[in-house]
Length: 196
Image (cartoon, rainbow, N blue to C red; front, top):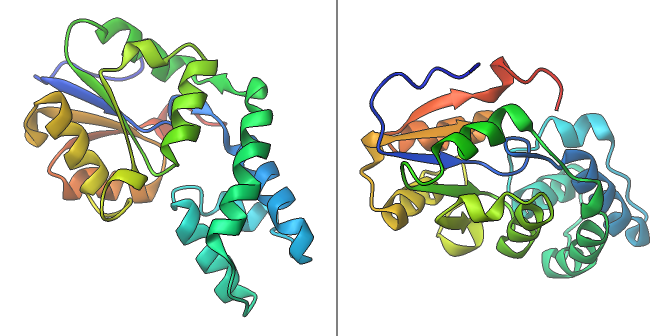
């Protein structure tokens, strides 16, 4: 087992995109396609350096960079169906998914994501991982997405486990910051999963 879990814990919380499932290429393709009608192009280097942001924050930062105000609702409506249509390409990150499988039924578990709830649940369904989790919490459901602690605090509340008794699995600086601010212990999967 590449992740040490020999300290006491009462609940586990997992980020979805880039942690449980490798969705970054699908998200990037969807963003590029959503921006095309506006004559805008987002480079892969720029995108992949910001994979921990909420979709709204990503588009807002990109709009600022290009000195344009983007209609976030319009972009979201164009982006979502492209993402869903390409979900068949999604692959689980097995070394992390196996931790969830091994703890299923032993401790309560949740997914806490900056993504849209519909997309997160669809991602977990297509990879067969959804039944492992007691709850799925998205940034749509809380006041602030990561790096604010809201997503993880809500996930802990739903599984009825004190934040200090939770371990969070994450793949971004924003997510790790959110977990730390929530008072949770973390596992940075980038230390184990080198290419995802």
